[in-house]
Length: 173
Image (cartoon, rainbow, N blue to C red):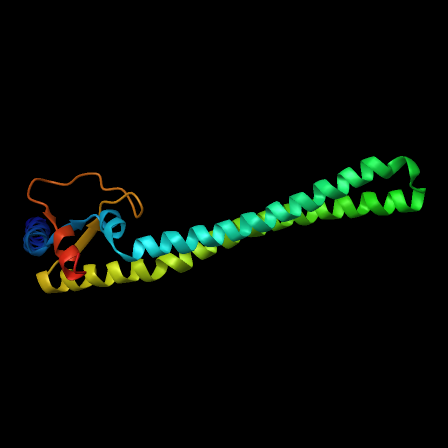
């Protein structure tokens, strides 16, 4: 029984010492990638390209809505003189156009999300590459991102190392 107790304490002591050594060798930094991406020169072009694409889609939707309004007004104005066959055809045409508009809006929303991701992906990759380089050069074990776009940090201690300036320097900002 004494041997078992000694063995248990030896294991606990060994694990405790190794944990202490490993904990001391950890180097953790933090970065604010949102602050970095906001000041990058590429950001302006990304916003302009996105807004142009959004305006193009909105223009198409507006043209479709104008067409729908014109067809509805024509239908209302001439409904009394239309035969049943023509009236049914016009109603179907108006309903089909309304459905097409709804489908286009849904597809446009997904297309906008895809376009935004397509535009920001190179920017994010560039920032990530700079973070990776700073992390390797400075010997960090972990780097946490304190920006809201990638997660939440519960605590940053007084002795935490902020590498945002190093990453900005790496990017020439």
